[in-house]
Length: 136
Image (cartoon, rainbow, N blue to C red; front, side, top):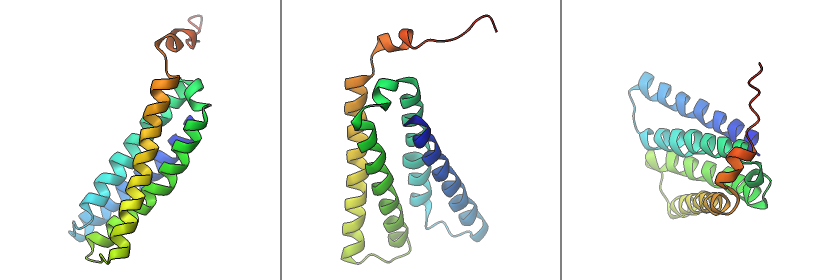
């Protein structure tokens, strides 16, 4: 599960960098909030979750990790696309409602991640998982 999160995170850093380059090239900074959310909620958050799952296999193997993956994978793009529409002045009720749904779904995914960490990440797993070979 950790690898899936890292790969999804890389998609978001690529997207976030492209948005930043676009804004710089056009000097149109309407997408600043989309850029920030893509890099922070997409790249940084997903990468940290991925590294957490790589380090703590019990959490990665939990059904909570799968729920987290799908909720974040569905909610975040909905949130970012609708936020981009709104940043360009297109904000009918259905777009703002869809944005709220997307951010809520992604937020529930993070809440599930928190439950997973508090349930399945233990300090003793750090020592039990240590497989560093000092002979190399």
